[in-house]
Amino acid sequence: MSTELQETLKSTILRHLSRLERYEPAHGRGTSRLSLAELKQAFADDPVYSIFGLDSPEYIAAAFAGGIITSIHRKIGDAYEDCVRIIFSTQYHLTAEQVRYTALISSGDRQLRRSLDVYFALKDIPRTQWESWTSYADAQLKQISPTPKVDIEAIGFEVRHCYQSADSKRAQADEAMARHCIVSGILPVMLIFCAQSNRSVITRYRSLWVVTEGHASYDLIKAQTGFDFYAFLLANKKSFRQPIVEMLKRLRET
Image 1 (cartoon, rainbow, N blue to C red):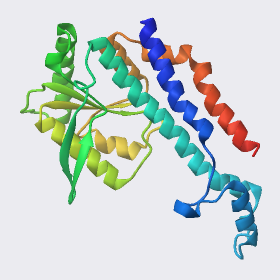
Image 2 (cartoon, rainbow, N blue to C red):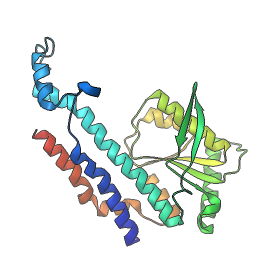
Image 3 (spheres, helix red, strand yellow):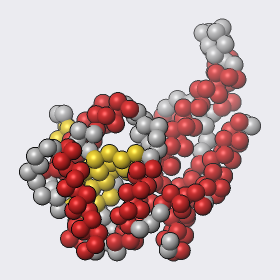
């Protein structure tokens, strides 16, 4: 594996995770957000919370847990998105402009500007990879549409470290993006790297997206770029765990 690429990926992941150091737990939204000390006092003074034990340390910890978990997953998600873009850009010698794609799509009664996380036109990549992706696209497109009537000229990725959201508006927008890709000659591929995703959402997406999950996503990247992303992550596991574990320890001691 390229040492330069590995160093770039490592610094990218650690940069995203380092933002967890600045995370300060707070409850509420906007100007009414409360610090931990303020939340304890507010709950202790509340005429309902104080009666039913919602001012207890256990409940207060649970109240903060949602924000903490969301923040951790957001940073990991950002890191995965950047890493996949870097891997394809580096291995295929693509510019930042060549891996960018945005479109105006219709989702329900809304017009949305959506971007693919990673994109490349087949004409812009090396011949060997072009042939490999063409073969892959032909096989996968038939699973979405038994009689496809479009020639695939590009590959478009949505990158998710995990997909647990069941938000209907987000799902509608993702589906609208997939439809746009297909009619535009772009194979819509959703790379999901965990094995804990919301099953109902993933089943729904498979009718429009080429969905890969868990090790299958790592395997696809390795097969198409030659870079073993999973082996890289395993080799740096200790470094990537440390910022998250330290954050959780710090919050537990607060």
